[in-house]
Every structure is written in structure tokens, then in C-alpha cells.
Length: 239
Image (tube, rainbow, N blue to C red; front, side, top):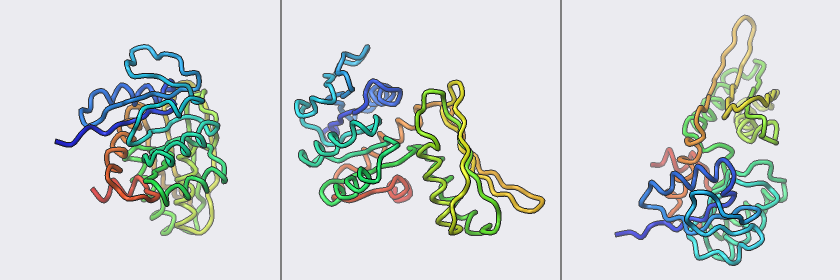
């Protein structure tokens, strides 16, 4: 019988971190060995040890880290994964170009997967957007996204990923529009407008658990893989 995958949750006190902790408890193939938050304070209902971001070196051994935090804490986590030979799944957005380069370099040593969105529906939307942009290269293209009022980056990381797919398909980037209101979990529309007609490809998330489930699934799929930079689509469509 295969031992459970030892998981470290980074950004554990945030919305996604709490969802990851809750859903991981329901999966016998996963064992959360540590949670990391900026303060390191105890988290209600969480039985695993909680460490401050500054105390990563004190965390017990882990096979993979799942990271939904802020760019300020990303570098130390990535360095810890490289030192320990542990894989990394990250959904932290707003990374700098330098952080992206460091992440790419880490893929030569450990398995890494970064995604702006861990929803299966968004992975499919990305591919549909690329194909539509290729077929409608002369049309106007826009990416419209909406999130809750607490989301800091705009456009969202998912919007930028979808925009990159559009640019790949038609050779030029789309326009972006962002809305921050209420408790919207996440809505993304890729719109193509031509003379007298318009196509809208839309994904709406109504529950944050879809992202946590996707990240936990990605972690399980990375188990035993060689070092490299993986995409969520690689793991989903290969399974």
C-alpha cells in the first residue's frame, strides 16, 4: 500500500488555505504534515502544526508544498522546496518576472506547477479561447473578469492566462476589464466581437472548493514525476 503523500499548505490562513486544509482531511491519499501562515498563529479547527513563514526551516519533512499566498512569501518557500527536493504546486498570483525566472529554474531540480486557476473548466476555457482567437483573428478581443472586493491584483492571474491564450491564437493581446465587488468567487469572459455578431466564452465559479480540489488533484498527479515545469492541462488531459 502506498504511503499518503505528505503535504505542506503554504498560505494556510487564507481562503484557499482553509479550503485546502478542510478538503485534504477527506482524502486518505494525502497527509497534511504542516500549515504555514504569515503569523504562525493557531488556526481554529486545524490539528496539524502551524508555522510562521519565517520558520519554514522548522517544518517537518514533506513531499509537496501547495502554495496560495502572496508574492512576498514565495521566494523562501520555493527555496525550501529546492533544498528538500520537494515538489511545488502554486496558485500565487502577482509574481514578478524575476520570481517567474526562479520558478522556471527550479523546474530543473524539482517538479513544479504554477497555475493562475485550478479549475478544470478554466483549463478548457483557455484552450477554447486559443482556438477561437485563431479562427477570428480580425475580430476585437476582450477579457472581462470579476472577483470579490478583497482580491488585490487586477487583471487577475486567470485573466492574464486567458489573454495569453488569445494572443497565442491571433498574434496580438486582448483588452482587459476588471471588476471587484461583493463576494464574487470568480467570473471570466473571453469576448470576440465582429461586425454584427459577438461570441462570449464564460466561466463562473460559485464555490472556491473547485480550486482547492484542483490543486490537491494536481499535487497527487505530480507524485513520482521527474523534475520539470508542468502545466495543469498536461496533467488533466494526460490522465
